[in-house]
Amino acid sequence: MKNILLILSGCGVYDGSEIYESTFTMLAIEENGASFTCCAPDVQQAHVINHLTGETEPGSRSVLTESARLARGKIAPLEKVHAKDFDALIIPGGFGSAKNLCNFAFAGNQCTVNSDVERLICEFHQAKKPMGFLCIAPVIVAKVLGKKGVCVTIGNDKTTATAIESFGAKHQDCTVESIVVDTTHRVVTTPAYMLGKNMLEVRRGIAKAVEKVLDLS
Image (tube, rainbow, N blue to C red):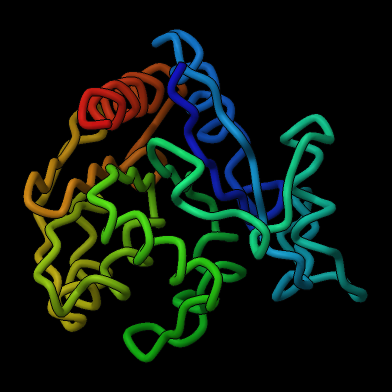
């Protein structure tokens, strides 16, 4: 049975992993006869957002602890996982991808990527194992593999697409229910809630992305 590594970034769209995207990914993996292992960096969130009001709250939360909510407690620290133990990698979206796995939400095209996230992407790439990135998460692989000319999509947001191309990566416009596949670098991306208006269309795009990642593994 293929085992897919999922990197989570917290729990909740505004400061962590997008819950529906994460759940749809887990479901699609199991529907295709594979299994998944969740991991997250053992760091503090960039900030905490009240999901009712949208306002920043005082205090801090652990990305790993919050991600454990999505993983039903079964989660590993990112620093302890390696590509050699898995068949593929997928990173769901949510602002946590752009705030906790990298700082794109704050620094734009001057962003940096968490060192262990970058390490794992490079390990999977060097091993020629496929990777999937959903919603805003493609900015991460664009930053890490941009100089290699990786092709991704975040939908059709011109500002984000311009930032992606400033890394050296290529951006391809895409509808919410479609995917973009870079066969050279074995990277699959889909816009998910960068474009999605409802769960049904987001689910269709994610299902296609997961199926393609598994086909490539």
